[in-house]
Image (cartoon, rainbow, N blue to C red; front, top):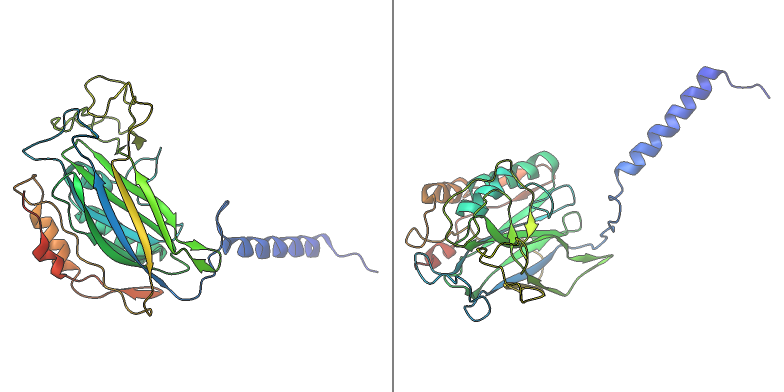
Length: 303
């Protein structure tokens, strides 16, 4: 048998390498499972605040503004997108949301990720909670290529503290999970160095990564969550997702609603621009999504 020339052997080797590379590109990242559920699934998501004076007595905010929660802002996405992650730096949009409750930049970042990477399927939001304890809810849709859910809710008042979920997978192989419930704990966005709920603005330079706030960290007596006698903080909130048994149909998420100007200084003009700018259907590669003003606007809370 005639031996192949070095050039031919090299060509075959390069071709095999190319095929292997293309095949690997379609596989999930390490540690991720493949979702093979066929139809999209719709879920209700309920956020329950547990920030009471009994559970968190130290420096509990009573007025100007009292303890409360911002609107919930989230996305259904693939593993190519990350809204926030522990031990990583937050984006400018997440910083604005964590520090001031401004959603404009974060919404634009989510939209850009959906357009460029086809990594975001839908955006969802729920109204603000005007007290430390209470509930808010909305609905969301996931599909097999976008089975992950992330969201954030700002702790109001606070320097840059929030609660949320990072990339919760609602798909289990070829099935959708019937429900999921998680206790939530406070996180520091790493952009403001304030120690207390009502600390004045004090930018963290250089910016730090996202860290979980615990009963002993930051280890400073002035910190509002510093309870050295506790092994762990009680959950400050809880989120519950329940699958809805409805036939799949086009889903329109509710519009973001932030706390009123009476409770906190926010950029209401930016919020209104978000609502107006997303009244029309946004079409992206690989599908279409809708952002519309919703009756939730009439539910804006005033402190």
